[in-house]
Image (tube, rainbow, N blue to C red; front, side, top):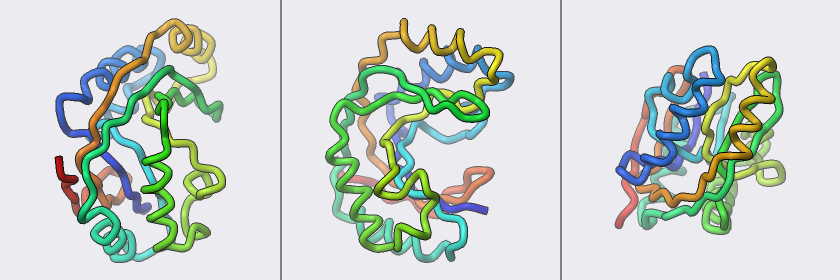
Length: 175
């Protein structure tokens, strides 16, 4: 069981991401993002060996008086893994990095999954996370040819556990 702090978009501005999810899922054996049953999001931190109360306290403290955030995205990028991961890159990630730093001031970064630690974290909105090697070249061509310029308003932060995704608590961000 893992715990995460995630900035999410449960509103209509998520439509461009949902469209990209559907398109990119054609390269996967099964649609990875739709299977989460969770809206488009930016994961800020993932923890394994931690009590759920700690990230919950941090979500309440850090985000209780936080406004919603509109993030402009431009382009689809990839993380090469055993399976290819496609993701949308924020144009300006400074506000996201401030949120990320606020979390890590409260919880020791060494408790966080290494890819989500301050020195390694790449803010991203995942488009597909399980593209097999045999479909990778076609998926990368699609990503290069796809105009992915849109703005998403993230208006909630979750403390959650996974898999499967189960929201422990949602903090609404003010408009």
